[in-house]
Length: 255
Ligand SMILES: [Zn+2]
Image 1 (cartoon, rainbow, N blue to C red):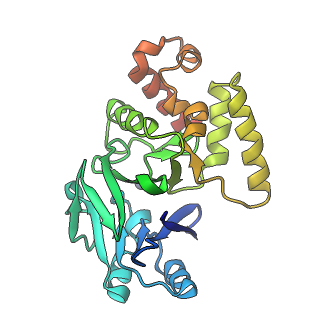
Image 2: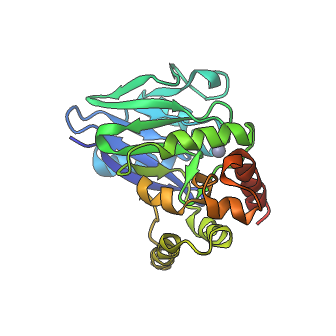
């Protein structure tokens, strides 16, 4: 049975994802930015909290770790690489590990770039990818610690996941991302359709994620650094994808 997944809005534009394994009732929250909104949702649903899954160490992703641990006695899971940087971590995972929430299995995938210890959790049977700040709808995380080469390799791993994978990213950055995407990829018909959809959703104050990987693969310029239109924008060819990706990231940083 697929996971039940809840979205909790936190801070200005963070999305915190709360999930429950239907078979066992075990629960986990991904990257809790703030305590109170998570506590309130758990109370509303009458759920307890068994686990915190962290994707990386930034404060808007681990902000409520210790308070939630105090309140619920939950187990904090994160990358072995970030033992020293994730508050309250007790369970370490690394690339290729299978982690279980009750009967739901997640594959842990290393995705360095935004930070060097960044990991994502892919629950294949639920078609759910919790990708933190590695991949956003039509965007990707800034390179705070890793290189363009590392981030491009990380994004290539994610785009190879099945088309029906739903991307549960950690921020609502889609409207800014779509403006940039249209700038570098203006002739992309699927992108223009998605831009219209995003405009409609945001006008109504609705979220634009989760979003299918199939849509991201056709609309996200950062997943398309080895495509002819994106390479051509920078006067390059698809075989220099790392350079195209680096140019894209640098342009977006100041867009
Ligand atoms: Zn971050």
